[in-house]
Image 1 (cartoon, one colour):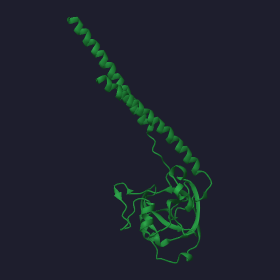
Image 2: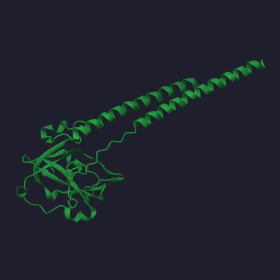
Image 3: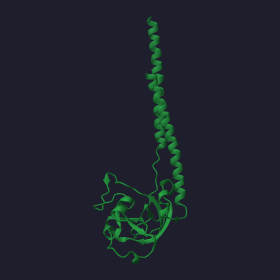
Image 4: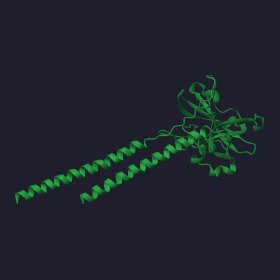
Length: 243
C-alpha cells in the first residue's frame, strides 16, 4: 500500500512539474506576442459587428485608433496606484457617429486633480468636437480592486469594469473593451493631466519556480523510497541473522 502511494505521488509530482513547464512555454510565447503587438502600427478599433470576436488572446494591448465625441458628463474616476503615486484613471465614453460608445481611459490624475475631472454638466453631444484617440485596447476588469468591490450607486470604482460602468452611466451600445489612451514610452509634458501612456504591460511568470518545486518533491519521494527500501533490507537481514 505504501509503495502504491509513493508511486502515485511520484508520478503526480512529475506530471505537475511538466505541466508548469508547458505553462511557462505558453507564457513566454504570450509575452513575445504581446511585445510584438504593442509595437505594431495602430489599426481601427473593432466595430460593433466584431465585438463578439474580441478576446484577450487576440486583442489585448493591440494599438487601435477611434474617432468620436467625448460624453464628458458620463465620466467616471476609477482609483489607481501608479509610478506617480495614488490617484485616479479618468474614464470617459467616446461616442462614434454610429452611436456606439467606447470607454476611453484618458489617463492618470493625482488626487489633487480629482475635482477638475469629475463629470461635467450635460451638453448636446453634437456640440462636442470630434476627437481621434489612439491607444491600447484593454479587456474589462470586472469586480473591483483588492478587497474592494465596485459600488455603482455611490460611483466608487476600483477597477475599469466596462459592463458595470456602462450600465451605471446608461450607455446602451458600449463596446466590451476599453482603450488606454496613449502608448507606453511616448513623450508627455510633465504638467499634462490626465497623463496618458501609463499602461503597465507585465505578466507574472513563476512557472519555472513552480516546476522545480514539483520536480523537487518528486525527487524527495524517490529519495524517501530508497531510504525505506534500504531500511527494509537491513531489517530483513537482521531478522534472518536472529534465525
